[in-house]
Length: 549
Ligand SMILES: *[C@@H]1O[C@H](CO)[C@@H](O)[C@H](O)[C@H]1NC(C)=O
Ligand SMILES: *[C@@H]1O[C@H](CO)[C@@H](O)[C@H](O)[C@H]1NC(C)=O
Ligand SMILES: *[C@@H]1O[C@H](CO)[C@@H](O)[C@H](O)[C@H]1NC(C)=O
Picture 1 (cartoon, protein in one colour):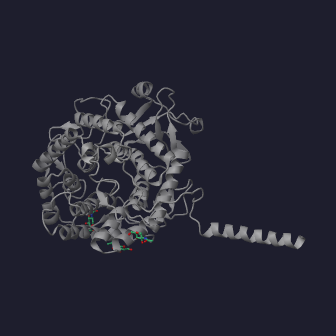
Picture 2 (picture 1 turned 180 degrees about the vertical axis):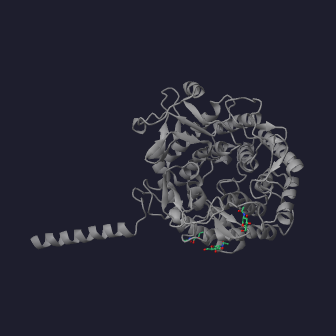
């Protein structure tokens, strides 16, 4: 009897030690509590519009509104071409121009996928000619930022090949694939030296003349650090480039660089959420910020999108990491405003051991990203969280006198454990007045023509089919055009609490206005089969990439 008992005991001990051994050496960090199967890419994401609209998705179009957005795109292009051709951007108030993205004609290249989707063949032909015959990616004005270059230029080029191959617009030349990819390869090859670090993580800048990675100021030293978005937003573009060219080096370099974040085992206080920034030398955290907002945002955005783009055994891990991060965000960073009558959901950040009751326009991509991933993974709680965050972002728009949302705002969290005495309340008189009226106060009053709020409406509409997202999108479109319209285009606004005040326009207009904001708005009112989320994944600059299922 005793002998048998001890045998059972020994067997139990063996099993226990095997379990701990296995946990210690083989399991992924934070994988506990992960108890569902990741689908193999084939879960439907879009709402079944066909059933709702009598078997024809085109019946869902709102032609008048789509045309209104297209007219704004045409007007944007007309003045850019007239006054700023070949420069990165037009100055929409004075009609001057500026180079902010190395002088490769950012507005031309970044908006190619928008004109292709809108069927603007004449404009597209000009853009195509620029890409194939004019732009020179062998020289650059100023230091090159591999993050901005990858999401805007490289993303646009590979996406254009995908869109042309899918027949969205008649190709301007039968050799388009070879010709565009030649340029894309030149650009990516010139960026190559950014991967020359002990970890494979990317330098934040590169000097094309020296062909060497640099810090932001053009220096080389061992204390270079990067935030998560810079370190982790290239895999969609690089894997597509490898797929289209058959050259695996892009995918290899990008995978290695991102693995330092995806498979990290340090600096992850909450499952999936990484402390930022990180050293490119060691991959380890050198800062203590935990946020889904800028400057860490698109690392999280890309985790689920990597899996959607190439659903296979390896990228299931990325989907899992996304799930962990979003679950942690819901648990640790979600915050509801104090108001009993008009509560809104926002996202906190955490830094240096403290919560920060601050959110930015850039963070508003997260609602749409949550809907995308939660629908795919069938996670109703995360889905609701995403919808609540989209509503919160809408509140930041409609509570402003201009009905356009600000760059940054604060609120008083209802959760008392999140509200230690350190939370600063509204300070100035205008902040106090706004807080009284709206439950938020502004920390940055400007609007930079950014897309994130309408981007989330786009996911809202395409995934739920709920008309409210189209109403919200139209309301935003009208307000944005009214607030930003300038003599030579559309301009950043200094202060969204003013309606068309003299001197309120900043005279800048970044390429994401036409690449992203107008594209998402257009797609909301077009046939929902156009760039369906079941077939395409949008990179963080709104360039659609074909899913390879
Ligand atoms: C890049 O390197 C070249 C050669 O060392 C130098 O002349 C140039 O100023 C550098 N460019 C920038 C933007 O730092
Ligand atoms: C790939 O990474 C290596 C460093 O590991 C770098 O030297 C090379 O230039 C990179 N190539 C490309 C095309 O990114
Ligand atoms: C999954 O796809 C990615 C991108 O093509 C590739 O790098 C990886 O090796 C694939 N993994 C498996 C297990 O097939």
